[in-house]
Image 1: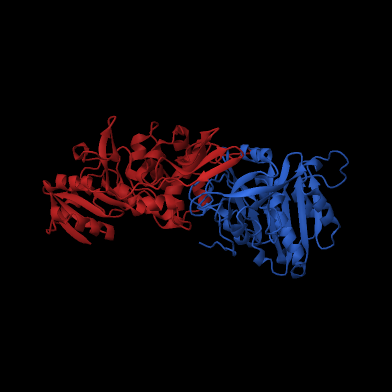
Image 2: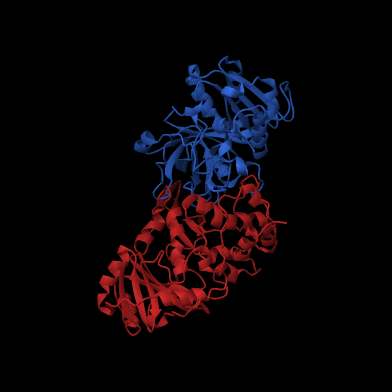
Length: 290
Length: 340
């Protein structure tokens, strides 16, 4: 099996016993009307020092009596004191996390999965395509790219969401928009309020930029239809499928590739992914009901 | 491989010796009209009839439900505590070779990268004394998946009845230790089991093969009408997964009340409608045919590709149990016949 696995930190929390480690909610920042960025700190200092992760990995956040949810890490990988998770308040776990609030405690297992292949970006162009909450696992990539900016040529971030009110990380999007090191384009499906920017699906933004197919690597994370539309648009632009990476979403329970919920063909999204090269999943990516 | 002989008269002595030891003895008994594996109090309860038990013994290695840890609310504090240690040394006696072979799947999945401690601790302390099958029934098809009613895969010791006595074959160190521990009931003869194997295999009515071409493009397999046929009949009850010796999917849920409870690992099934559902409400496998496809391809294509072992042992339980007559043997057969 050819799964090009980049170096990735292994879970230090609960890998033996499934017992989550206690973490304290240091901050809960509202990104928009239904999305919060939750900064948590591992209480045990020894574990905190050992805990490392790479962009694209996720944690299982546990609320006793409610359950566990797989949440992407959205903070700066070089920041070790706290780990950021951007949650949309749609399920019982995310709502419970909001109720517990700043200062409260939850459980954490992780980090899980294979992240973005940062080591394969070489000296080419990088396009990040995010839809909605899919921007969360891409934010650590932006931090990392800006920190090592001289290693790449063009860096582009294309982000789309339903309405301007659905945007997340708005102050940062505005900051990146003015930063000459990164080309940031934001589009919305429905222009409400005072929005004067692009309107339409995020793949339409690809028409606004010049793609140099030979040296482009794309990282894509969004809802299923966006992932597909982005993959096909990039294919039409002749970006090789080995250089298009997509972060998939599945129902997950264990994180160890054993409980079977995230089975995607012969792969486990929690362990072989969540980030896959399009070429690794080309045979089933277009299929419904895998 | 160490071989010994056990006379028919010595079998009750062996069972009694195990029962009297510190080792827990698990064997088939009749409970509510079903023959199932249970810890044995009196050896007279043990029923070593021909045919297969209603359920395999997997629940003694992978329980239907088990706590991963406990949680207790204490004012603003929540206390998490580790679960009780699993049961000690266990002898599982009377498993059929098909069920024993199923362990190859559980062993691989539960250790392919991360060690599943909950399974491993039980597995290490379990000795599997299998019993060859002399009378496969019409649903059986172990030879169709490359196994045999007298095969040794997965067992520590295999007992095969030959002319009124049992051949005991130890194929693991654990099995050899077992033969040594209870050495006084065994004798040194080595009866030949060739004829017993031939006779048992001749009774299998479903020759197969049950396999999915590892080279067949997945996109072609996906569109096959066999899934519609199986899926439209499937009620999504999950019985096939619960009786299956290799099904290993589990759900993790909190079970408790306002004071506390346990985080439990429970049997689950890809046949259940909610198995893959997202919090958003989106369900990648939205209909029953797609779940039927997942069950069969997981066993016959994905696990072989991933772990090098076919995840169906031909025990026939799912076919016998299904209230709607869905039969993996027939589905696999349809898959291998040319499409219109």
